[in-house]
Image 1: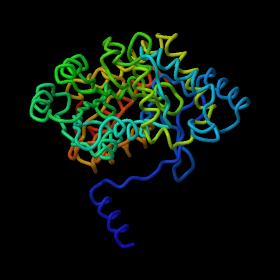
Image 2 (image 1 turned 120 degrees about the horizontal axis):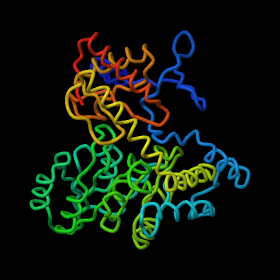
Image 3 (image 1 turned 135 degrees about the vertical axis):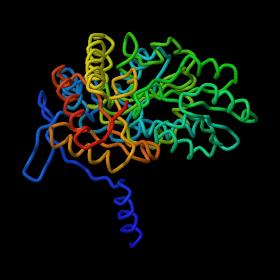
Length: 395
C-alpha cells in the first residue's frame, strides 16, 4: 500500500490534495462550515443552487407528497418494474421546457454523459470535443472507444480545421458545453450549429449550468439561440439551478427511444427516488412560469462583477452567473480560499485536473441566496485579501 501514501504525499506537495468540508444548511440562513471550535457561518459562493430553488416550498411539498404516495425508492431499473408515472410526467415537461419531442431521465449528469456518448459513437467513429469540456464528457469519450479530437476552447476556426482534417469513415460527434462551469463563458452555439450542418456531425450540448438560467422560459442557451431542432442531444441537470437532483437528455422521439435501449447507465441503473423526481417536476414548472428569477439573478451577477472591477480586478468578466477569479498557482489559490473562509466567504479553490495546469482559481457562483449588499461586501473582502496576500486577481 506504499503507492497510496506516495501518491497523497505528492498531491500535497503539488497543492492538489483535497479534503471534505462538512457543512450544515438551513432554509433562509447562511451555510455553516465545521471548524475546530464548532461551526462558522459563511456566505456560500460554491453552490450551484443559482435560483435558490432547493429551499423553495413548492419543491418540498411536491417531494413530500411523492414520498407519501410512492415511498422512498423506485425499487428497480425503469426497464424492470421501476417505471413510475412521475418519471413520465417529468420527462414530458422537460421536453416541453427544451422545445424537443421527448426526454429521458438519468441518475446524474455524470451518468448521462458516460451513457449517451458511448451509445452514439464507438470504434471507427470520431468525437470532436472542446478542450475545457467537463470530466464526465471526457470519461464518456474514453468509454466509447472512438477517436478523440480536441479543439481549442470556443475556437471555431480551429474546430473547422480539425473537422476538415479528421472527417472520414464512421460517425462524427461534436460535444460542447453551453455554459462552461469553471470559466463562466458561453459557447458560440450558432457557429457550432453551422459547422455541424456543413460537416454532417451529430451535435451534443451539455446545458448543466444553463438549464433554468438562460432562455425566455429557462430552456437554456439552446432555447435562447433558437436552435432546439439543430441540436441532436441536449443534456442538463436538475441538481443545479433547478435545486433537485438527477439529469435529463432531450431530443427527437427517435433519439430518445434509441438511447433508452442503448445507454447502459440508464438501462442498468435503479430509477431515481420518486420524491426527487417530484421536486424536479415542481422546479421545471417554476422556472417556466417565473422568469423574474432569472432576471434577478443576472442583476445580482452584474452587481458582483462591477464591484470586483471597481476594486481593481483586471480583465473582462464573462456573461454568466459563474465568476472565476484567476490565481494561477495552486498553493496561492488554496491560501486565498482559506483566508476568504476565515473572513466569512466560502469559495472553493479549483485546481488541476478540474482546470488546466497553471490556471488555478477561485470559482464564485452568484445565486439568489445572496443580497446585493452581500455581494458588494464580499467583493470588497476579496480585493482586500488579495492585496494583503499580494495575489493579483483577474477575470
